Image (tube, rainbow, N blue to C red; front, side):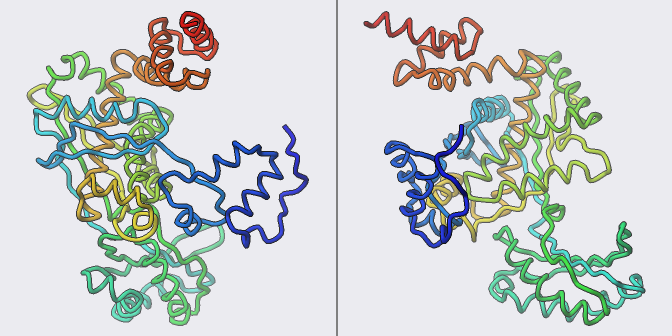
Length: 427
């Protein structure tokens, strides 16, 4: 379909107010009055807040938030807000948590709240000598970094360690400097990036190098959240189900094609909580997948074993750079409500909860794959979406969805036929 508009070069678009931007987009795309009205409705995110969060705002994209129940984490019951567009994700966490609730639920821990900032130094004839000259100045580096964020230091965070390594690349040897910074309850991107940019010219002066990239690493392997849980074999359907889950895990551990989908299932849960709390889903996703390949082979983020008693033990470790302060977490009112529902008091506590959700999600996916197949439960929930797409409204949605599931044919053409039959019957 060709747009009525002629060009995307709209002079001064960013200077227009939101109404002006909607006008320009409506002219370009030929939007009608109803479509314009839809963009103007920003839901529970005030329009002025949205307008300051990102650039060129015309509207918002509302994602459903569901609550995962039955979660007991470190001896405490929690309700988990999850923001996702995918059917069965929330239900999967509820079911997994219910099956281990009586056995104590999930136990979690965290390696720390440290982030890594990287500074790239090039054009060095003596990179190994330069590396040592940098390490000799750790006290100066500490002072420079901590001066960038006195508030963070006052809260117990700040510079922790200096690292430097020589990296052989197709463009020659580089010295890569790592600043290890404890960012406490912040995700920490702004803090560590500021430190890296402040330090870079000093590093160049001390070594005679050219300083280039100065930015954090999303492979936050000093900020690893861990979760473990044991599901009683009788509670999950017996030894055959347990062994099927183990076989599915062994497949993912050995094969990157399977591991990518296996880990995507984990991230269904992880990213839903990250998004609900206003944290950076892209940073968490990037860090998790990089962590899965840290040994030179892309494999499973989780591990599954049989206990001596014959029960099923699952464990998960992944980097989780999330925060309670800064960014959308502080600005978005729904994110603030999600944090209140969770009842977390620190970034570490939030990360540990998210890891438990990821493990629960993984259990449910593996169990479905090992038994009925992933489509049975997923399509039963997806049937509602198909019913809505076919034009069903109100009570029609559930009626059409039930008919699709009963027939085992969750398809648009079947939904349209069922809806027509339903309406004829009422007429």
